[in-house]
Amino acid sequence: MRTDIAVVGGGVLGIATAYWLRATRDCDVTLLERDAEVATETTLRNTGVVHRPYYLDPVKRALFARTAGRSYAMWRRLAERYGLPWVERGTLMVAPEEDQMKEVEEYGRWAQENGMERAEYEVLDAAGCRGIEPEVRCAGAFLSKTDTSTDFASLARKVWELAEGLGARLLASSEVSKVVRTRDGLELGLGGGGSVECRVMVNAAGGSSLDLAHEMGLAAGYTDLHFRGEYWEVDPDAGPSVGRNIYSVARHAEFNFLDPHFIVRPDGRREVGPNAVLVARPDAYEGSGGVPGMLGKILERPVGPKLRLFSNTTFLSLVADEWMSSLSKKAMCGRVRRFIPALAPDMLVRRGLAGVRSSLIGDDGFVPEALTPSDDRSLHVLNFNSPGATGAPAFSEHLVGLMEEKGLLQGFAARTRGGFWERGGPGGG
Ligand SMILES: Cc1cc2nc3c(=O)[nH]c(=O)nc-3n(C[C@H](O)[C@H](O)[C@H](O)COP(=O)(O)OP(=O)(O)OC[C@H]3O[C@@H](n4cnc5c(N)ncnc54)[C@H](O)[C@@H]3O)c2cc1C
Image (cartoon, rainbow, N blue to C red; front, side, top):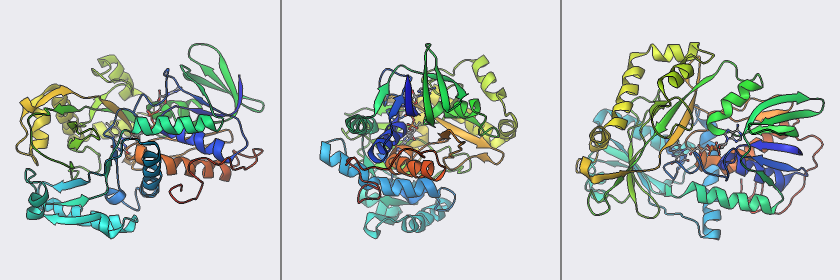
C-alpha cells in the first residue's frame, strides 16, 4: 500500500494531526493504529480533565501552556456542537502545607501570563476553601473555575469521524515495527506482515514513540520510563461530598510525582488517582511487566540518564511509595486523606481504568516539554504527556506548521476543505 503521509498512532494526537493534514493540504493521509480501533490507549485511560494552564510554567512548559490554553475553546465548541461530555466543574489545587502557598501564589501569575481571564480563577485561603468545599483541609488553594471534566476518547472519536469525512483513512490492527528508507520516502514494516510506503511519516505512537524515533536514529540521547497511573472508584453512596476536582501542589516538581487527586467524572462518578507506578512497558495495565522486562527497560540504551536517576535516593523512595500505593488501598487512600480527611479505605470500592504515562529522560532528568525531533522524511512527537489530551487540537495544528517549516509538506498544495476547526480561526487555533 502507498500513501503520501502516514500518521502512526490513533490516539488523540495522531487523530487530530490527520484531521489538520486533510483539512489544509492536498495529500493522501493514512492513520496506522496497532489496536483494532482508535482512541483505546492513553486517550481513553486518563483523568479526563480539560486543564486550564495555570500550573504550567510559561517558560519551561511554554508549548504545553500555549496549546492547552488555545485548545480549550476548540474542545468546548466540539463538545457543545455534538453533545459530548463537558462539565465545567472547576479544580481546587490545594496546598496541604502552609509552605506550599508560594506555589499557589505563583499559579496566579502563571494563569495571567498563560492568558487565562481574571474571572476564571481565585486564590483562596483556608477559610475560603472550607467555604466552597467543607470537607477539604488545606492552607489555601488555587481555584480554577473553568477546568472541565470530559471523556477524551469520545472527543477524539468525533474528531476521527470528521477526519474520515475529509478523506483520511484508517489502517487498524497495524503495528509499525520497522522503518526502512526508500528512494523517495519510507517503507513502514508492519508487525503482522506487509508494509506501507509513504513519503512522510508522523510518529504519534504515544508510549512507543521513542522506540520509533530511535529506530530512525533520532533522539539517541534520550530514554524513557513508563509509570502506570491507577484509580479507585469511590463508593457512590458514601464518601465525602466533594463537588470539584481536588488536586494538590506537587511536592517534588522535578520528578513530576503528584499525589493522587479526587476527581469527579462527567457522569458524577468519583475516583481517586492516579498514582505513578514504575512498570516495564507502556501497555502494562496490570502487574509490573515482569522482573526481566523491568531490568531490560532500565538497562536499555542510553543507560546514563536512567542510572543518574536511580542513584538519587529521593527518586528511589518515591518509586517505592508509588508501588506501596499500588499494593495497598490504605496507602493510596492515605495520600488523599492529607487533604480530604473524611475519605476512608473502605470507601474505595473498585479499581478504575489504569493508564500509563511514558516520561522522557535526558541528561538533566525528566524532560518538562514535548519534543519534536525530525529529519527529511519524518516528524516525531515525544513526551506528549499531561495535559496532552487537553492541548491536542492546537498542538497538532502546530505540528502541521512545523512540517511546513521543515519542508515535509513540499509538493502538497495548500487547500481548505472546510473542516470543523479552521486553522488560525476562532475556537480553531
Ligand atoms: C494516568 C493519566 C492521566 C492523564 N490525565 C490527563 C488529563 O486529565 N488531562 C489531559 O489533558 N491529559 C491527561 N493525560 C495525558 C493524556 O492522556 C495524553 O497526553 C494523551 O492521551 C496522549 O495521546 P497520544 O495520542 O499521544 O497517545 P495514545 O492515546 O496512547 O495514542 C498512541 C496510539 O499509538 C498506537 N501505537 C503505539 N505504537 C504503535 C505502532 N508501533 N504502530 C501503530 N500504532 C501504534 C497505540 O496503540 C495508541 O493507540 C493523562 C495521562 C495519564 C497516563
